Length: 112
Ligand code: AMP
Ligand code: ZN
Image (tube, protein in one colour):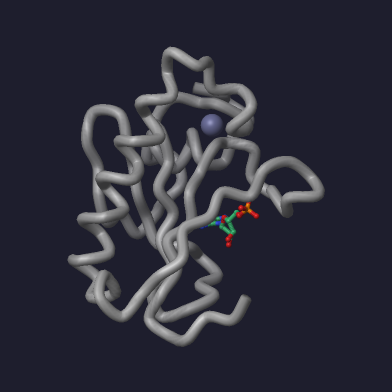
């Protein structure tokens, strides 16, 4: 938990979110500025600023995120039509919120 972190505050419920999934280690919610009809954010509850900060022996959380993504893609009806998963990392990667998160985007034709 980082008290200055927006997503830590969302996970704790201090800032409201449109939650779509939660378990012991993950939290997922709708992006506040959706870029497509389906735009979800999947985050580890543990605060890691970027992918670079996850120790090798804790990388299992990334597999867990992908298991959740697979379920959410089905639930939100984009598993077959198609979707995009991305994790912006650091400044040139376009990262704005420095708490690891994966975007799940779909529901329209996405361009490269
Ligand atoms: P990134 O550029 O990968 O760091 O993306 C951060 C994402 O967080 C953006 O798509 C924002 O629209 C989203 N975001 C920022 N604040 C909130 C919030 N309070 N609730 C939901 N999504 C948010
Ligand atoms: Zn955080």
